[in-house]
Length: 255
Image 1 (tube, rainbow, N blue to C red):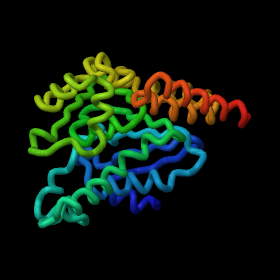
Image 2: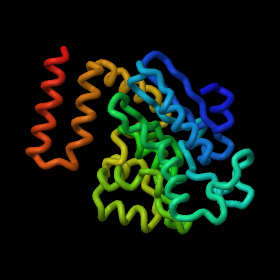
Image 3: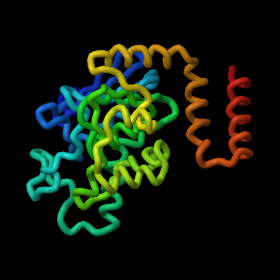
């Protein structure tokens, strides 16, 4: 995608060798998200150069993302985009449209990349779900997470419910979502929502250390290991043993 297209969608993409950095770039709106942004995120995933191993997702300014730009629910919608949902849409049409929006989030889980959300300030609603779409999360000590959708009469539908339950368990996920409370950085670390918290001034250094560590690992082994780990929650022990054998055989025979 060209820079002008990304800028119109409120995004910036920088690629440095094997590391791609995607920046939500609407700081005047605390990086509130729009359907156009989700479509652009999906196109970034579709066109990512083959050599990219690490994708960093971050927000410009003091907030990661304050969630969905509520102008998307007005009749006029987002300037240049219109409303998120057209009046009179039926269930089938809505299903197709929401699936399209979700594609901006799902590609961050692909085995060939490791995705990292770098969170400072607010990660609310869609912002929380976007962070949860990444494999790893580093948070500044001022980070605030909240699943706001139920307070708006909506449900979290941007792929965030499964990783939240996987991280904290069903009961805690219910409590976080249905009370719509804010989870601060220290609790997010204790619950496993984030893997690292640091003072805000140390966030870039912590990211650089993590990226350097990830790039030291053999690329093929990293891809196979991520693929292996992603299957583990849904497998029995015997099923996972079989997957381990297949992945290891592929590594040995392919070397």
